Image (spheres, rainbow, N blue to C red):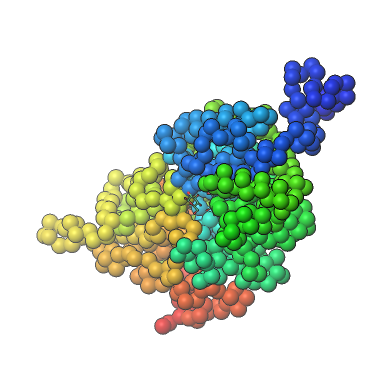
Length: 633
Ligand code: BGC
Ligand code: BGC
């Protein structure tokens, strides 16, 4: 009611005022008047912009490449931190806020004081920020399959972002992964379209809250449109990547059936920015696909927001830069993640428009979309960080939420001889594997650095910390990352055998194509700890199902813990029985990499051609099933 009244009043004021100024509101121009409808503000601002300023709005630059003094004069529309893009002055929330607010101040010196939009890959919490809450990677949230939980993670992540002045998240990844050899598998919830659709929509609702512009709301960016999860092994032409950024070799019906539904749902959930995929389809880079970007996404699916390119994604269309930009913008890209040489992009745009190769209608459409979203987000009214949210960064409340997510993400693959739960007063527990005591390993890529990093790179609890906190003072916990336990001798000099051995088998951190793996093999010392333990529990830390067929035979119990993030005690809550196992596989688990890619339609259920574990599999400690492999080779 109140809002409506104000709007009517504003309307009256406009009607009685000179076109450029709204009387009674200082010298506010209509586009600066938050009481006016967004469409009217956009129209007003569009009418004031020069062509150069419009090109500026379409330009997205990574922060290490921008000269601050260029932001205002060029009217740069957006800036971003890539993976590892923390402030040069230090990686704290305060320093982030100062950095981003500083760029925003520059943007507001532009002729029309248009705020820039700052983006970051907060893909499992505000991952580049030291001290942020790092949630399980999406592969774990897929196993948890709890939309309410996923939504709450989105809410919490938005708060930690806003504390640092960032209102734009390049998440969620809505890839429907068809081949887990892909290095981005962990960024995805599942191989199953329905599961991805459900959880990604929940996450978008969490990030955006009660709607863009409401307190605590951050703009989501489902990515990467479309078919990124369907690329074919060996088809990539980027660096020495094998599958990432490759070719999605399926017909249109399959593309639509498997990969498109998450976007339909995302748009319904209010997504107003979408990122284009590096991958190709039908012999053409996605960034060049006018049919998919414009006809299908903006036309058929009714997407009214703006399309952002991926990192120099348009550059891959063809080696002629100008031609690549012309093709990409004409295909429907609205904002170009340049990300480095923005002068070059701006010059090419000017020339292309002068030559009529990009029409002013296309430019206007792109800029309208961008400005509409900026207005909807309320960026003109609150362009800066909210320091009142600083205490939320890595707060107890958010860590408790992350811990709950870890609890729910664990999948129990095998549990013979009642190995789990482990009794808290077990006299001797051996713990092996570097991943048992390493925040970087348990968090994976997109954590502090683009590729992630081993070591205790940000505050949290490791699995070993969790074990020590869980056991009673009767238990003796011995940790050896090499799993040799050579010094554990009794009074007679005989090797001590642990009651329980806990072996953590882990992938090293990786991101994108650098994580493409031909064999998914794990190097570990399971055989060593096996000899020294009566019962052996294996915890697998990985961004995807990995090949554990041999280790499975050696172990009494096996737990898939994915990449849990900073709250390692979320793992030990469950293995010591304080919390139940409820996670179920959101990815089919191969017996050997040679089985990949799976043909999901014809997967055998038993025998040596069957996967090791099917989609949906997961035990609880009450199930009395003894593990039986139907492949006897
Ligand atoms: C990735 C995107 C990411 C962007 C910005 C690209 O390499 O593919 O997912 O949003 O970098 O960091
Ligand atoms: C950036 C990432 C980006 C990648 C693309 C890195 O330097 O930090 O965000 O995705 O380059 O190659």
